[in-house]
Length: 136
Image (tube, rainbow, N blue to C red):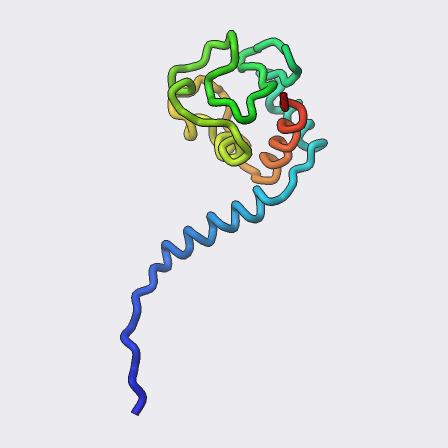
């Protein structure tokens, strides 16, 4: 006679969440973005409010030069919302990727008036452009 093993409970919801988190991180963030496409995205969706040049002027949003590795709300001579200053976010590829999807959801109380970029590839391209053009 064969002995039967006791049934094990399987947490499919947890496995499904883990699968999608890993899939998103491995498929989107692991890919190197296209800087040229990112420049086009910046021009059409970001340049109305931001500049990227060293010493560039603040517009409705802050100049972005040198923001990678810097904590949110710390660009000199720019008036940030208190939510942005208190967020404690350090800008890196992963934090920027999530932020750009929906800024108002990521930092509740931010004054950034932007609906976000829903397409992961478009965000990855924009981040590649920003890493190149904003690096100190």
